[in-house]
Length: 252
Image 1 (cartoon, rainbow, N blue to C red):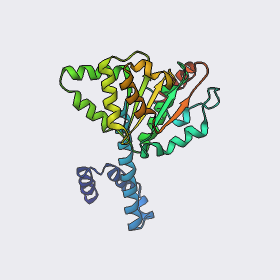
Image 2 (tube, rainbow, N blue to C red; image 1 turned 60 degrees about the vertical axis):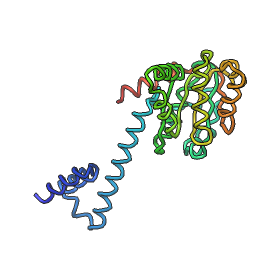
Image 3 (cartoon, helix red, strand yellow; image 1 turned 90 degrees about the vertical axis):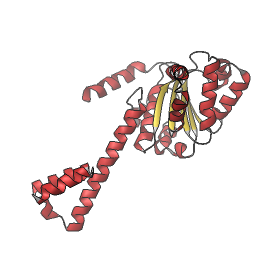
Image 4 (cartoon, helix red, strand yellow; image 1 turned 90 degrees about the horizontal axis):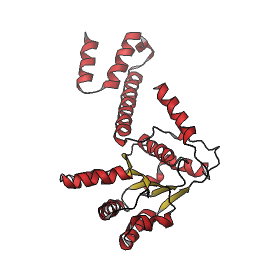
């Protein structure tokens, strides 16, 4: 009865990991192998791990990645100008703590989005808040938010993220509202937060897509300055990655 009351109190205090570990320890009789301080340490470790796992689940769910990709799934054997040492350096997320950007460019199907999502997932594992956007869907969302007066709320949500991923930049020319929205996003994030941008276009062609020369200069200056560049080459590897993702989904 005493143990049940203790577990009930743990659950009321939302110590779910600790409650589960305490129940398992009492039920299996393993408690005799612990001293009092060892048992306390074990329960705290279980609670800590449970909270970290729940936090990671929330971060991954909120991020809404296009692909549930990981560093372990990146194939470095494919010939596409992908520097393994450079990519692995991003695993410690030092670029996020330094408020730096990543630009991943290359032809269609070469794995830009997959790599961006893998880097983003690693940031979630490190405890950072991340949001993924297909950039055309982002612009559509912001246009709708302008109409229903929720624009500033959406912009504020974007600005609060430690890292945002803007995927498929440059597929279409930007209109005036898109340009101004993009400028506002990077104006507020410059030197404060990090971004990952993927694009089929090389950086030198971004001005043409953005349109207005003055605004294009302002946007590019804020994105490109203090950024790391990954320039992929080669043919499509989409089919190869689709097999990886299908296998991963099957295992879930």
